[in-house]
Length: 124
Length: 124
DNA sequence: TCCACTATTCTTGTATTGTTGAAATATGGA
DNA sequence: TCCATATTTCAACAATACAAGAATAGTGGA
Image 1 (spheres, helix red, strand yellow):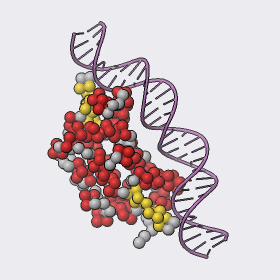
Image 2: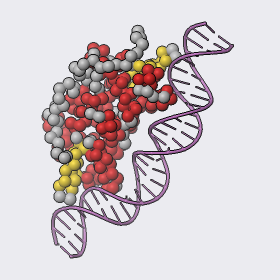
Image 3: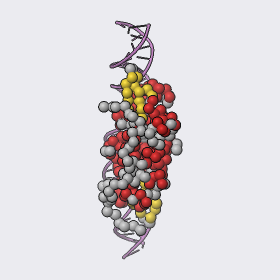
Image 4: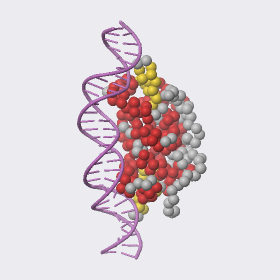
């Protein structure tokens, strides 16, 4: 994943309105919701909802499907998994045992070649 | 997790500079880096690095520890796991089997190819 | 004490984002 | 065709974020 893609996804989730939209759609899963339902559920003006839905879709966070005069939006979960993988890439320099996170997080250390860590002073 | 906490975390990751800082610190794991090393590694002016580090720390994305005249920063991985859990709460209306995998597990285990959680609508 | 080093804070200018109301586009039915 | 519904686009304004330079605070050694 490219950095620009990642920052666009995070930016999409950095507003309360868009975070609400995303979580609502995550809960709906496959069913998704049409634009009007989303606006109604969150008490948003239609144009405001449309503004955010467009941005989230362009960022890759949502998918949209035309249904007559409705637009059905769904959360793009695989994209979210890629984002998390990008975020935790080369976690703990590929040494899971050094990972300071709980056991469930130890799995965030993929078995990739040791990364080119910047030269640093060897602290104790 | 409260919504405001989540949006602040996402906002922290929505700039290229801060995303670079976070990923750098994720790779360093428990060792972390002091402010000057971070600025040097990313070719940032010291005041710019300090500005972003402060924001990320206040958001809860990083932790900081004083070491003499140095400030050692580390990625707050447990907080990231909480964030992911918040994001995928009640995924698919509480029927995770419809996703193909538990979100919390899938989120932090991208060692295998990301599973097709939801068959997304073809957006091309 | 003075000095070098580390890091942060302050200030200013610029750019971007979010919200609102009004208008426009697209679809399906009478 | 005409009309109601669903959604998007446009325009304007306030609010906020970012970057860079200068100045300030804290630490440790000579």
